[in-house]
Length: 149
Image 1 (cartoon, one colour):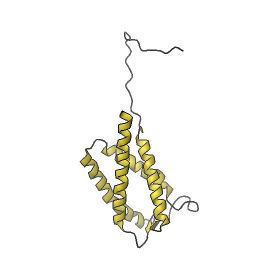
Image 2 (cartoon, one colour):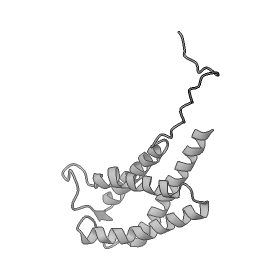
Image 3 (cartoon, helix red, strand yellow):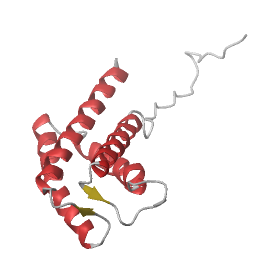
Image 4 (cartoon, one colour):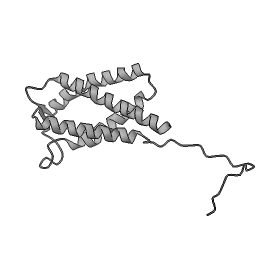
C-alpha cells in the first residue's frame, strides 16, 4: 500500500491543525445531562418539586427539554467562558452561576414551568448547582489533561 508523504523540497505549506469544536466539551455536556437527569429523577421521585409543563408528560416525570438541551448548552457556555480563567476565577464563576440559579428557579415558578414542595429551600438549588458545576468543571479539566498527554 502506497502512502503519500510530504516532500521536504515542496513549496506546499502544511495545513494548520484545526481544533475540533466539541473536542472534549462533548463529554462534559453528556456528564452534565446525566447528572441533571438523575438528580431530577431523584428529587421529583421524592416529591421535592414537579414540572407542570414538560414534553411527553404521560411518559416522563421530568422536563427532558431542560436536562437534554438547556443544561448541556448552558454547561458548554460556562465551560467556554471559564476556559481561560485561573482557578480563583473559575470558582468565582461557579459561585456566581450558583447564586443566579435560585433566581432563575423562582422565575420558572412564576412562569409555571416549575413548582416546589413546602419542604424545598432555594439554598438547596444554590448548593446543588455549586456541586454540579464543580464536578463538571473538574471532569472537563481532567478530560483536557488526558487528551493533551
